[in-house]
Image (cartoon, rainbow, N blue to C red; front, side, top):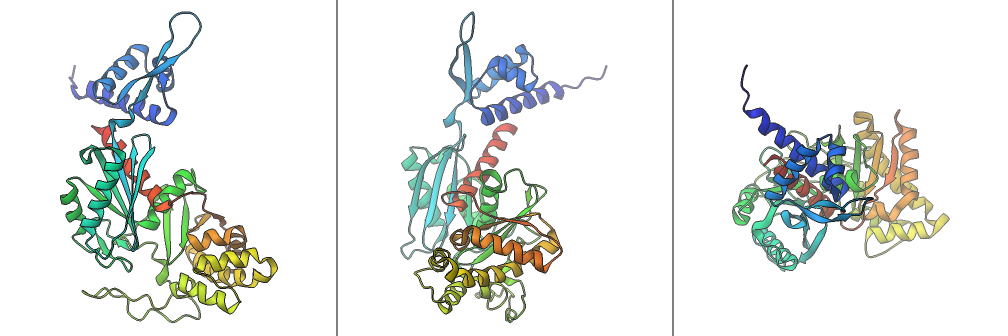
Length: 392
């Protein structure tokens, strides 16, 4: 008979992973419940738990009272077995969250650049301060995911360019990993919002959807078959460049050393925060931000409807263009302007898209609370850390 020495080890790894995934999803369970839900025998379940306890991943977390006989021990994953860091890097603040293996955020720290533009120093400061606040050693971090505006090359993990963060450029990925002494993942911020939306928000269990971010700028996150679609160069979703009727084309979008590509033209010139605020002023609505102008129009009822109609019509140009190519079925609106427009805006966009193209996607507002970029970064970091644990 042919000997296959790798099979027992493979089976142990499969059993360990099944038990860990179950405990992460369900919380503490008894040995009997773990065996029943994974299909493992009592003996195998006991051996699996013993291995996981030995690895410092699982511990007895309580007891479950039963009928006759002693109470059954409840086993749960040790919260401190792994930690992750998620970051939202913007032009005004760097926000860092530290979460345990369960996804519980135990510290959140915001750092202002204060004139310092060195990305490595800013990220280092944010991570170290967050770890100190969480009382977690930097060495305990299993994964670090950073969300930034701009295009991230999926082949190298580097930022190709960012309008808001000119200091982020090729070479930063390696410099950050060297400084923090661990692998670091940089991801486009809107892509992270899409991850958060699929995990926690309106796109839960939806495999094909797009997320349109409308805030200071405009961006698109694309999820196909349950996975982010970044494109070959990471530029999938850069919808601000989309040519639209009545708007001049961008003058020159080629990346030239020392100069960022132009965004003067395309959909961005119609629905950026600056464009929305200028449009709102023509309708008699003003505020400190575009979102405030839109919120005022919604609150004004019938008087504000022409402005909401106009904004919806502009956004529908981009949504319709995406939908006739991808036919996603679901469009999620996120960002400050989208949040301010609420149902009044989503309804009008859905109706406008249905009038202009042969597909009618459902258009809904984001349901993710708090900082969606930060939430997405933490979720992505957790996925990476858990996969590392499962595979170790």
